[in-house]
Amino acid sequence: MVDILTDKRGWKDFPVEAVVLGVFEPKPDAMLNEINKLLEGAVEHIIKKKEFTGEFGQVRLIHTLKKLACEHILLVGLGKRDEFGLEQLRRVSGIVARTLRDNGIPRFATTLHNTITKKATLREQARAVAEGSILGAYQFTKYKTLNREKIKELKSVILLEAEKAAEEGAQAGKVIADAQCFVRDVVNEPASSRTPARLAEIALELRKLGIKVNVYDKAGIEKLGLNGLLAVSRGSAVEPRFIVLEYKKGAGHPVAIIGKGITFDSGGLDIKLPQFMEDMKSDVAGAAAVIGIMRAVAGLGLNAGVVGIIAATENMPGGNAYKPGDIIRAYNGKTIEVGNTDAEGRIILSDAIAYAEKNYKPKCIVDIATLTGACVVALGYAAAGLMCRDAALANRLRLAGEASGELVWELPMFEDYKDYIRSEVADVRNIPGNKGYEAGAIAGAWFLQNFVEKTPFAHIDIAGPAWSIERKNYWEKGATGFGVRLLVEFLRSVR
Ligand code: BES
Ligand code: ZN
Ligand code: ZN
Image (cartoon, rainbow, N blue to C red; front, side, top):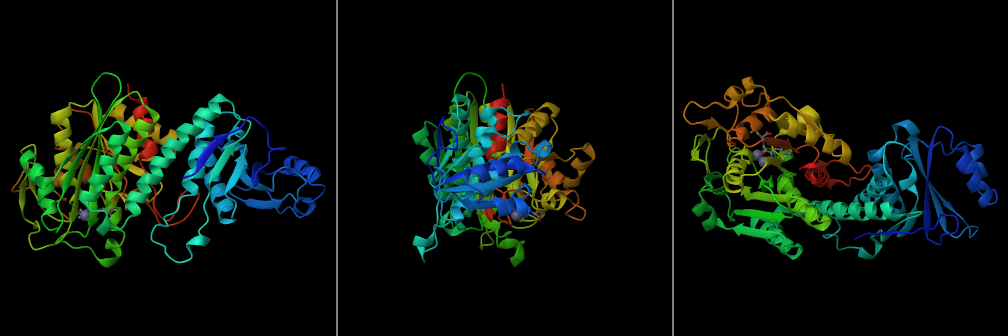
């Protein structure tokens, strides 16, 4: 884990392995000239040959040869000043952390949290630097056994010239980013060693933080009548779990956050092709995010009531698997026709959503799920799909996305789409009845909407941004932990 520290001193006489200095485009001259003077002409060539332009993300490591208290200076390009906001700061911090880490520098000091002169507070900037640094330095090395001594790690980041606001922002950023790295660890874990039972154990560890955790095993799930969850789990050799986490500070009804916890999605009898199955351990990302959110909420001591609900199971094609054409009677009594066993997420979520509404009377219900490939087609990896018929709730989620850098983009919930999941033989069908894939993300959301009676409801489809195919900014290949920053920010805004 990376320590985030603060210090009131400035960079010029601060003894540390590296000091990070941000430089804007297109004229890095003033800063470079100053460094050149301090280093007695050592960066003359960089200035003359225009080797460093301040282009966003550009880095240049300079050895100070003991002419300053620090051993190195890392110059980092911030791009154009008027395009530089909190998310750019977060990204640059990620690039910095990884660059220094990879250069074998475990500790650095930075003033990047003082870069945005308008638009953002010191506290927000310090938070963004802490988040970007921790997320950028993340790596999943647990299963590497060879040359472990060569694995480099970032140990600490020091925010310089830091007053109280910066210190508080930095600590909040650490809580949130640590929670997000924890989510990445859960999602990156191979599915065979992170079964529903194991996921429940991970959730139970949150009791240490004062969170109430209730776990229902298969017998408990049967007793509750969560038949959708049971149906999906039938093809698997391992038992499902239903996990309920409660955090409460202050009065009032809670917000319910619901996570899709398919610990592995083979597609079931409608089995996936190999290229679509390989990364399907990531189908637990919504559930993992819910655990991470609860952890962050407790860590921050947020003044809110939150109930996190996770339906967890594998989706497998075993001999007892649920079948296309089956009809399931869900927790709320509605019947579901199974058109395709690979549209399993909405089936388990329908039970969790109805359970939340009935047992908690929440202010609102938000589910977070890697629900559809269709959402990846529509929005790619840059944003999650937001589907919500309550304009005020949708707006709050959109703003939380902008503030946290985890963007959501709204897809319409026009009434016409409701017909797409009509069934001839049951109350609803789990895939569109015509071609099966039209408006796939929205059809999924309308399916879920059937299981809410009157509570404001939002569905967030994270099939795209939950998993990164590249190492970039503060993302490492694999799980991103998407949803923690978004929903913690959202929960802060709920009154
Ligand atoms: N878990 C998948 C969705 C998914 C796809 C997540 C790609 C992450 C990346 C989901 O259970 C699924 O298989 N959905 C089907 C629905 C279809 C059968 C209506 C899909 O998107 O193809
Ligand atoms: Zn599926
Ligand atoms: Zn799935």
